[in-house]
Image 1 (tube, helix red, strand yellow):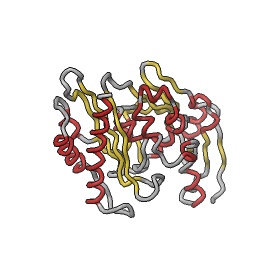
Image 2 (cartoon, rainbow, N blue to C red):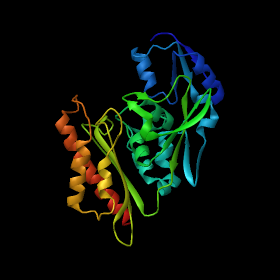
Image 3 (tube, helix red, strand yellow):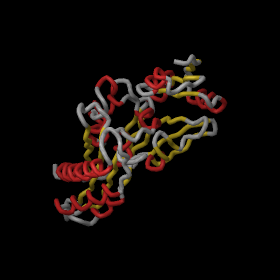
Length: 286
């Protein structure tokens, strides 16, 4: 491991000012990914900035809409009774991240900012139409999370900027979601594919009035499937779910790796979409 200078700011402004003038800086929240990369020598920064001293980044509120401080632990999302009531999809996805040891340390902001395609919470947050609060020396801006990712490990963050919070609107009444993933071997392994689906069903007509489908690990960034629009105005049937799942799988852009060839990943994605839609539909029915 190359020697580095350790920086621990106590305010967001202090962190942003340092980042603006020191390009060779690695920012860590929980450090579950970064520490491994440092140890292996993959990353060799001059500075390592630990955001753990900024207490304001731990603040989370759920009044009308959900605001998650960047340093909120994944485990906190998993165990929150309030979140399970208002944003159950996010709590469900958080519970599927790696293992409990990782979830106790990993942060929501870190998971978002890292930009890894094979993860769970950013997929769920995208399905929930969340936005990312970004703070830099020039001020604060909000970016829809669907526009936040440019590619694998690449985001819209500019020099001197960091993720400070995630804002998630409250789902509409009669809505429900489901997050599901498939891994090879241990559930702790990186997924072959994962899917977050949300549905809003009109209780009077039984027809779908809104839907989102987001697929992870099958493209350079979370895939927001336009196929979901085919559900709107329709009564969900097994045949319709299968047709939409096929379309959604065709929108993916997986690569061949140790987890399987392209055709296999698309097949898994199709099955997961079918199951996620069926699960979400059942939840809307209570």
